[in-house]
Length: 380
Image (cartoon, rainbow, N blue to C red; front, side, top):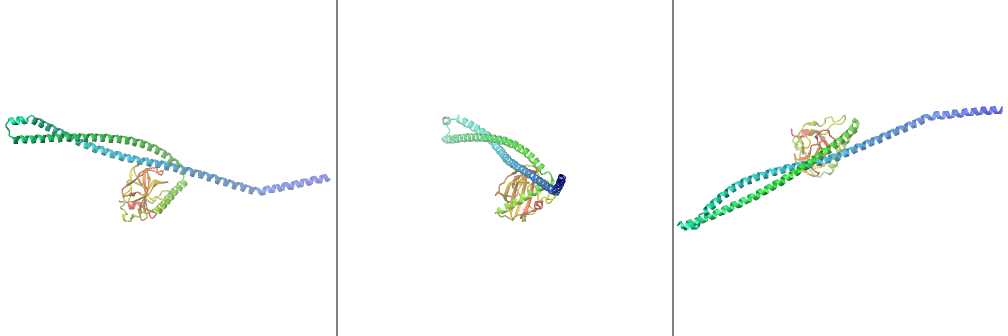
């Protein structure tokens, strides 16, 4: 009887224990599930943040590569321009020397003919000696005249010989100078060819980098973010420039509608037109052939000449009184910070830096930091 009671008591205890465990597990499951779900969300956020950080790092690396490539292209383009100008100058010098050579050759022909005539006269006169003159019974006065004439003839002959000798010397110099100039020209043309080949390689590498960047910012959200960041970088650069400006000029106020066009071409984007869903152009884009000279719109001082993300190789000119003009997307920069420039003076070469798809110039005017429509300030 006692054994039966103990077995029943054990079964009751086990039932109570099982029920307790079941209740404990049932009550704790939502908390465990919620904790696990929260942990999963945190892990996903962390993974996405890491992925985004890696993506941004890769984009920054690509932009850094683009900067180096475009700066290299800019340096090569500048060298090519200098070599081209130098070669053109040499060609003008060669043409001038050849003109002088032809003139000297004509002088030489005239001098040679003159010397022939003088020599002929001199020797014909020489056949008649003073003894013959005496025997002929001619007077001393006539003899004196003949002597003077012979001396003058001899002097003229010597002068003609000296002149011809000098002409020959000058001709030799011109021929030597022309040969040197032609050799230098050939050397520069060969160097120009090497630089042109080099720039072609750099441009191919740049094209790949731009394509990779485009892939990185292909969705609208990333593209918009990049555009906004570009504008912020420009604003930051303007602020930094404004803080270090010391030169004061008369500004642009008196010249509205009179400023020089920085480059002539079709206006591809106008001030205020839509750049993206949320952003509008703060300047204008003028299409032009790569390598075309970009000219200062007005007198001023160069306050920025560098690569700026989104705008490529950029030049900023300060005109005083808080007025500045901006020139972006360039292939090469021709001026340095601190240089004084005149209206219409070449300051850069048109390009497509900053990752642009086509050649052109980004042109912007700001008055006291605020962008204004640049087209209304240019000559009609």
